[in-house]
Image 1 (cartoon, rainbow, N blue to C red):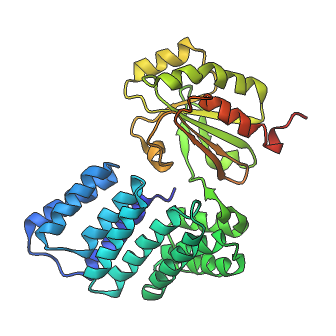
Image 2 (cartoon, rainbow, N blue to C red):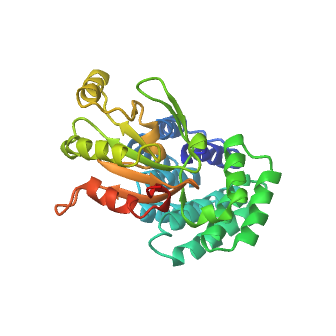
Image 3 (cartoon, rainbow, N blue to C red):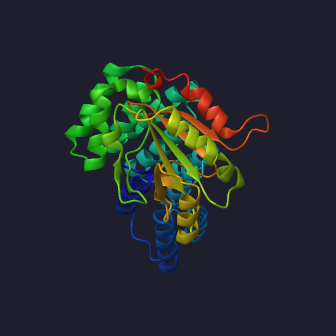
Length: 330
């Protein structure tokens, strides 16, 4: 699966090759610590280390880029945009300018669902990144995504083919091929690929769920609203037998507490404990409970977060599922 984490490592590598090696050993130490923290999904720590490294260097483009991607991972698109602008002011080569434009485009793209004008702003940034560094496959992929968001599929297909012609990594190539097969997927938020092994040893892979409606339930035993939702989730499995795939992803650290709770409450659907938070990070989940509804084309159609004093979160989920034609009784 293609994640921002692996993209960042690749992009920062491009920047580091584009800049002379720093004689400041403390700078290199802080920068390495920042990269490690980012790879471990410790984004606040990564941000802090990138900032310390930047201060030691009296400003550096790759530090600002690292700060920007850290902001993106915690959901702060505005912070990412500002970091991209800072990186552009410090950039000394076309490569690091391209990466900064790609970062700024990613920040605009993140808010494009709420602000329709942001899709065209993202396009302009991605286009400039691809112009400055035309051999970087990810820039063409991102440009294609911004074009699909604007229903300009013919142009998007050209960029997707350009991405594939550059022999990208397997995850990136697979994603480009998914969009080529159905560019309409680019209108919404395409769910990332995932694979997990459930409590009972079943293998669940997103590729095998194509054509089915999937609900991801992000929860924890220490979350009162999550615990209260269990009876309603049971009702969902009974209401849509064989037509709805329900997967509960727990953020619990304590394996025994999780297993005991699941057994005690007879939670017979797919159960997975995300001990290293890879799935939570992959889907950008930071609050509990959170429900994601993924349609048969792999698009995230609904993201329901937190509580509403007037209705339970599962009630909101039920209301949406009632509108899905594929779940209608036959």
